[in-house]
Image (cartoon, rainbow, N blue to C red):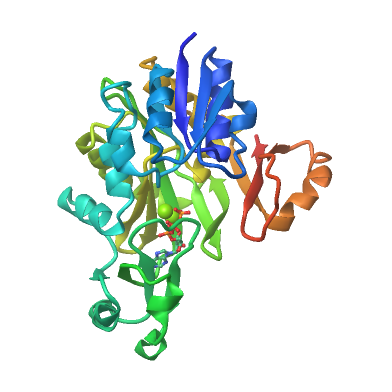
Length: 350
Ligand code: ATP
Ligand code: MG
Ligand code: MG
């Protein structure tokens, strides 16, 4: 069998490695020290910093293809192994996704709609940036944010006093607050031959900036905007010559789908596909990066609900095992800190 290299040691890598194992592949995880729950299910693991070029080189030479499960893998070290091993999705997708400004500009160039935004590269620019987009607004660090981290909601210009410090003293994007009716995601897989398949778009509900649930059917509003959103997501994937699973998050409102952000990887809002679709996002990602034919993305239940287990939610897992409709997934994390995703549960109704 061949060896798939995965950069990143989180639950997404863990579920990718499990799907890869089912297809007879061996996984080699490369991740910095930490709670690396992917390593436990992989055949081989290298624990090293991403900028440890010697370790990265050795890893690359031991793999037949390299992918990533973490969108903040630094780009420069990856470029240094490009000649040693094929990397899917392309590094360019990482570059775009790592910078909220580049990301929005990339989407807009392809005809996509985004929230009104302005950039503050230094503290003195924050006030102007927020004035440009108006209040209420949301400030986000341009780089490195996830699960709502590095974000600040501003309801009036007077709240800006310590905003720069509170978001960590780094370049910010100010976005106009979108008054959406619902949120959804387009999860697609693109093969090396450009073949694109879409899973049904779930309705995503967030709590404190973290995904809480993904449900299907998503309801009439999202269903009516899914087509336009798919076109936009596919245009981005095509422009990036993308190979693998690609996710785009959208706000649905009366004005049509508004693009929020992309994830150049398998996505939390696609976890329901493990039980709820003919082929899961994890399996199709493995198929795509290995050049195999893609599997059907059809939904196989009338109703699907995926619920994240966050922080102390995990204490309910024994009780969840008593529910015959519940498919319980635990990630094996050593610590169940508040706000930390420690598992998820998917229920299918037919
Ligand atoms: P992820 O874990 O999805 O990568 P993230 O930290 O990159 O999260 P976003 O997706 O940008 O953060 O924002 C998290 C959530 O905050 C969104 O799903 C949405 O509910 C809300 N949000 C973000 N931007 C806006 C906006 N401009 N207007 C209204 N709500 C917003
Ligand atoms: Mg994000
Ligand atoms: Mg998001």
